[in-house]
Length: 268
Image (cartoon, rainbow, N blue to C red):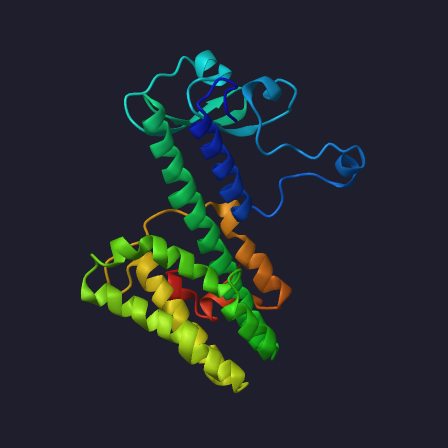
């Protein structure tokens, strides 16, 4: 949402946020009845239009709008702040002036949402890749590796992380090089050869390099965020669809992620 009197650059930034949010989510939340009534939810609205919209979660870009005034907000620096009010989640993108608002907005769109979109597409594609390998669907698996909507979506993430990676010690960069060599050179080759056993072996090797960075296995931990469970758990449903789930110690375990060894991620 933006204010009707907001600066044009801030309005454009709100549109950019809506675009990147759309790259991340799968559905904006409407069904056949809404389509029949031509009531498809708006993705970008002004504060004036918002009065006629039922909403629960919203991103507010800028400070020259009704919501910011009602909340009595003021800022001294570029800010992204979540405010909960009346069972609603309001994410404010603000600053003391237009430049700071744009700075905060660019960070949310270009870094956070853009990165998350690529990261989750890659993660879910990686789990599906194991399923296709197990089913002997080598052509589909190869297309998934090469697709910009599949595992190659990670290229976006690595481009964003490039300046940070350049500052990493050699032991970290070596893990990244190993992972890239597996996913984009070695694994495609064995998929073309339709070698299932070797493909599974390489898949597990690549998985372990991901764990190294995310969990600090043998190297410093570089990904320290806690995933949002209701989003992250989609990998379990993908694995279940391929039959890659079994019960370990009385608990369901995603074999596609754990390769049947729950101790890999510290579970007992």
